[in-house]
Length: 137
Image (cartoon, rainbow, N blue to C red; front, side):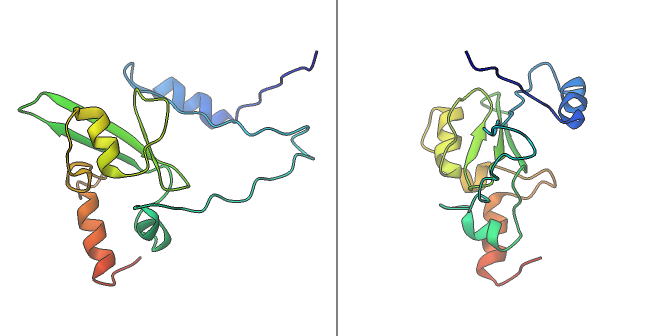
């Protein structure tokens, strides 16, 4: 029977030690025969609605998006993947668009571009307008 060996960077353990009790931590595993000889996977290419923002440098993989609806007493948290999808806390599969991710959390059809916010408080829609106006980093 083959042996499975999993090696984690120390940063993973540091992140886990400081994670909130209600926080979901996502870990990606890469298959290979040996860390020194394993073929490297080609870099993920952003696709879908977030691709333009990512290619322009306005949105980076690993960015944490969040929202809080006070009146409905609900919150959401999502992480941007390298291929331009959103991993939403509590959901196993990534979502292809901000609105699909928002619908998964709220249970309603909703505009995810205006709902999801970056850590600095800007909505995804603001980034989209910056891109449309030709502003990039």
